[in-house]
Every structure is written in structure tokens, then in C-alpha cells.
Image (cartoon, rainbow, N blue to C red):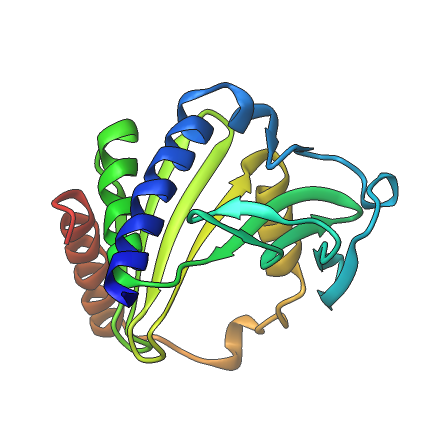
Length: 197
């Protein structure tokens, strides 16, 4: 029975995501909320967490149809009070694989990022001002789908980079040999990205 339920959820998810991705709605809004909307204009949202100017909310008063089930487990990200991201937990590897196949069919091959240290794989697609990511955290067995409105998410990334502590230039020294080794590693990573590794 559990397997049948997963298959049904997978098929409904593909159907629902097809409507989101094919239409112009994704460019303007996500699950009925306009990108850049102010949280102060939205009703029923509860704060989940905060990191600097980025605040995450959930709306337990509203159900969304995601993966074929009504769920309130959608997290909405706001930067300086403006909606810039949405995160949805993926319940099974079958749904993850179907979503990846569907996105690849609609948007082309993803950019693939492998983070071996924390056993994470990220598949990323871009459509106009929207970036879509499927993330697989192998160590924890967690999966999620993320939607980002890039005009605001770029500002979030910049703001987060600016909060990193400054490192003085003479705090460490890299000799020419180490620098050359690092450059070889960077070039190899770029080649692997091109080939989708």
C-alpha cells in the first residue's frame, strides 16, 4: 500500500509541477504569492526562523497541494520583508527522481554540484528570473526542492557574503606551488561541471 501511495504522489507531483513550470505563473508568483511580496501584506504566516535580514515563515492556516497531498509544510523565505524563496520537503527518492526527470525534460540538463564532504548533490535549473534546485542530502537521507527569485536571492547571497569576517591579507601566505595546485583543482572542477559530473 505504501508503494502505491508513493507512485500516486509521484504522478500527481509531476502533473502539478508541469502546470507551475510551463505557465508564466512561476515567473510572477509561487503558490499564489507574488515574488517580492511583503510579508506584512500576507495573512496567517508564522515565523519559523531568522538569520539576519532573512526570515522564514510557514502558513499553518493554509494547505497547499504539493506532491499530491495537502500540506502546510512549505517554507517561505523573505529578505528584508520581500518574498524571495520557497522550500518544499521531498518525501521519497521516487518523487525526487521523477521531479528531476520532469525538470530536465522541460528545462534541459541541470547544472550539477557535488559536495563530497557533506555528501550533498544539488541539481539546478534556471528559467528567466527563477532558479529551481533539487537537493539530496545523502548522509541524512533528506531531500528538498527550492525555488528562488534571483533578483532578490542574489541580494541575499551578497548580504550573507558581507557578514563573513574579513581576513587580513597577511594573515596567511600561499606559496606559488600551492596556488598552482589550487588553480588545477578549479580547472578540473569546471571541466567536471561542463560534463555534468
